[in-house]
Length: 83
Image (tube, rainbow, N blue to C red; front, side, top):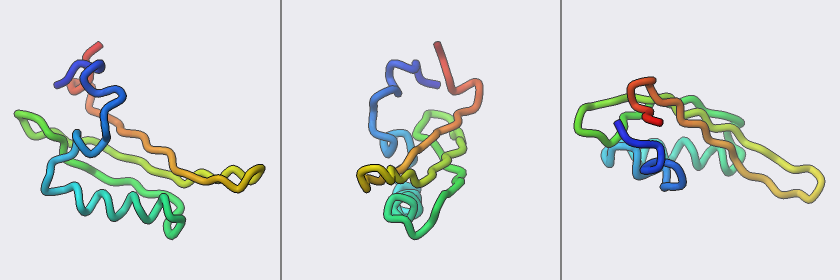
């Protein structure tokens, strides 16, 4: 596991195993670009012991000014999070 201070504010890609990054990036790009409204992915995390997590992504659009983006939530197993 990792202390939250070692995770918060760091790029999400750093947490995903290198061999999985291209596939995850492809799915997340579809959400950001709007070709998919949302995605739920099981990802393998970079760790000494193999760990998995759920990654949720959803497109967000701000109709007031036309800006859009995406929201990402990485749900870690309880034993992966340290406070």
